[in-house]
Each structure stands twice: as structure tokens, then as C-alpha cells.
Length: 329
Image (tube, rainbow, N blue to C red; front, side, top):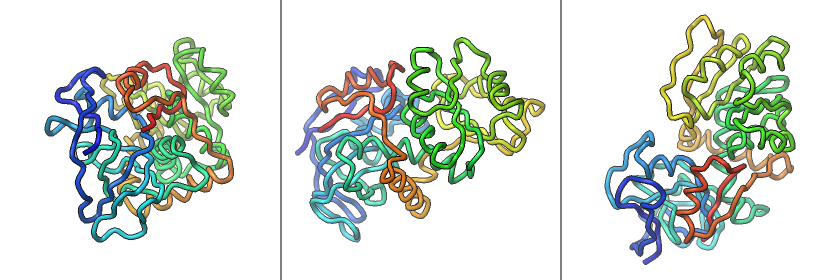
């Protein structure tokens, strides 16, 4: 038996319950792990409330797809992992099938990476979703490089902050946006070349001004909704607009053709990278290299205790955090 977080109905953070559940043995292609830390992501809030891209198939439902832990048992056919080894779980599966909000759990080995020896438990749970998401869209798909300008909406999120560091690593120029001036100086200290306060400034006009009228080669947008029209109008010729979140909660229109001269406006989800073994291998190599050199340092806003996950979800939905939320087990 182990303690795990489950919910029996859709709703707010208050529907989360810690319950005793059976763990069992890992099947073929699986690992059983002892969880040491959990990375909290907006996807879990959306899944719990019935607003995620995938619906809950059955109740009670589990939660969570990113964690740090130690291997307890190895299923048939799994190679490369040993009992007692520190590992990290990356989001690469449906929360209808596996869930990591637990003290011990079973996960697919294909979603598990070896945790670098220089990372602790909290960092191991804070790194992979943010850096692989930004890497997958901007580097793997977009090919961002030296001299490119990238606009990052909701830049104080863990993904936005990771994208700032990745931009610097390849010689690109990160422009951050935030709704509140309260976070502007923190974003500059985090490496943003410029910060646009969206509640006070016209975003597209400011992007064009900051780029000398050229526009941005990349926009990495977590907000979506009607704002994509203005962002698209500030793209450089041949630029790319990646939409990887929908914080606005509003419908996202396709910008009028006359307002954009981009190669593409497209959605990006981490699963494009994390469920493809070769793409995941390359992403892991890129991220570990940056961590080892000191170019990448995950920003952790708050560390909660496992028993306080209801409060952690309330903070997750507040929009006030700067960086990653982690729960230790």
C-alpha cells in the first residue's frame, strides 16, 4: 500500500484527497519508483477541473506526470535501470494511465530519465517539463539560433524562464511579456533583454519598436486567445508563432492572412518530444549539457509538502508564482 492523491469528481483544488492505494509490481516496460519530489504543472489543474485536452476516463482519478524518485523494482524487458538508482519522470503518458502524485507509483520506463548526479530531488522534479518544452518548440522544431529574437508570453512561468536561458545559450535575444510590472524587474534579472508589461503597453507595437521594425523571428505563446492576432502581426518575415498553452481560456482565432508573413502558426505540446525516443534523447543531451555548464538553472518558486498539495494547487492557479512549484514526498 502507499499514499496517493486522487479525486472522485471534477472541481477545484478541494476535490483532491490523499488515500491509501495498492501499488503492485511493475509490468513489462514499467518501473516502480519511490517518489521523492513532484513537479506541479498547469496540466494537472486543467485535468482535475475537466478543462484539459484529455478528459478524465474514470473515477477515482490520479494526477501528475513529472517527478523525481528512486527505482524500487524493474519490470520485464526494461534495461538500463537498476534498483536504488535516482531517476526523473518526464510527462510522456496519459494521466488516465499513470500518475505520480504518490509516495510510490508505477511509471512507464520510456518516460524515465537518469537524474544527473549534480541535481538534487527538487531540481530533478523541476527541470524536465520546462526545459524540454522550450527546447522542443524553439530549438528542435523552430531551429532558433544566434541573432534571432524570441518573444515569450507569461514569461514568469517555469517554461518562460527556461526559454530565456535557452535563448541565451544559442545567442538569441529573449523579450519577455508579463501582465504586471511587479514581475518586470525579476524577469530582467532572470535574463530577459527587454520586458513588455501587457497591461500598460501595446505588445505588437513594442515588439516592432524593440526590433527596429523587423519583428520577432519567434513568438512562444502560453496565453493564446485573441492576443495571437497582435503577436502574429509583429512577426518577422518567415517567423514562427508557437502556441503551447491557453492561459487566457478564450478561443484562439487564426490571424488574418494580411497580418502575418510567417512560415507557421502552430500548436506545440511536450509529448511531441517526450514520446519520441530519439527526440527525447537529443533533448535530454541538450538540457543536461546546459545544466552541467551552468547555463541552465531551474527557478523554483515554492516547495510544498506532499500533504499540502491542495494548497499547492491553489497557488498554482493564483498566477502569482515566479518559476516552478514542487512538492516533496
